[in-house]
Image 1 (cartoon, rainbow, N blue to C red):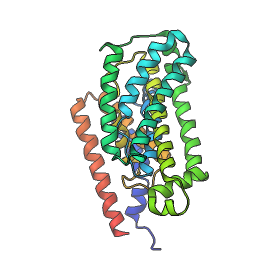
Image 2 (image 1 turned 90 degrees about the vertical axis):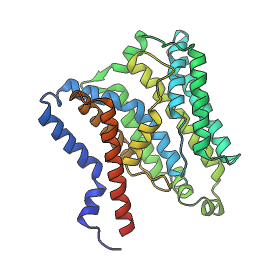
Image 3 (image 1 turned 120 degrees about the vertical axis):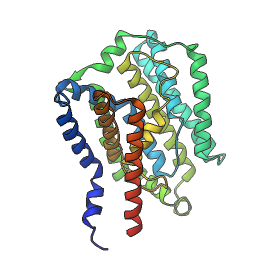
Length: 310
C-alpha cells in the first residue's frame, strides 16, 4: 500500500480543519463570537438535526436514502406537544413510536416490495406533510412550560440535549465499529449479494435500519419542539437536505459500505457553525445556502479526485 500524500492527509482531517478555520475567522470578524452565550446557542442547534443524522447515516451505510425524515420531525413534534397533557412520558413514547412505525413502513416497502428508497421516502415524506397539516389543522402548537424546561436547560454552556446527543453518538459509533450488527451493516453496504451468500439476512437488516432512522427522526422532532417550545406542520421541511449534506461532508458515501456517525456529528457542527457565524454577520439566508453548496461541491470534488488517484 502506497503512503498517503500530504494533500490526502489534509483531506482526511478536512472537517476539523474547516471548523478551526471558521472559528478563527468568525472570531476575528466578530469579537463576541466566542462568548459563552454564542457557544451555548451554537450547541443548542446541534441535537435536533444531529440525532436525525444518526439514523440517516446508518441508512446511507447500506447504500439507501431516507428523505422522509423531515416529515417525521414535523409530525413527531406536533404529537409531542399535543399529547403533553397526558404526561411527558406518554407524549415522548408515542412520538418515538410514530417515528419507528413510519420507518417500518419505509423499510418494508423498500426491502420487501423492492421499491427504490429515494422514490419511497419522498412519497412518504409528502404523505406525512399532508397528514401533519390535517392533524394540526394548519396551526402552530404553542409554548409549553414543560417543553421550555426540558429543551433549554444547560450544564454550564452545554445543553442537556446536546450532552444526550454526544453520548448517543459515542454509543452508536461503538456499536457500528465493535458489534456484530455494525459488521453486518457495513457488509450489506459493501455488497448485498456477498452478504446474502454469507448468511446475513439482508432484508431484515434493511428494515431494522429504516426503523432506527424513523425512531431517531422522531426524537429529533421531540428535541426540536422542546428547544423552540412550539411545533409546526411546516417544521422539518429542510431537515433531510441539511442532514444529508452534513453526512456527506463527514465522508459517508452515497454508494454504501462506509460511514461514521462521529464524522457526521462534525458535519452537523460545521454546518451549524457556518450558519450561526453567517447569521451573526447578517448574511442573508439565500447567500448562506449558496456558500454551503459551494463548500460541499468543492469537498466532494477533491475527494473524488483523490479516490481516483488511489
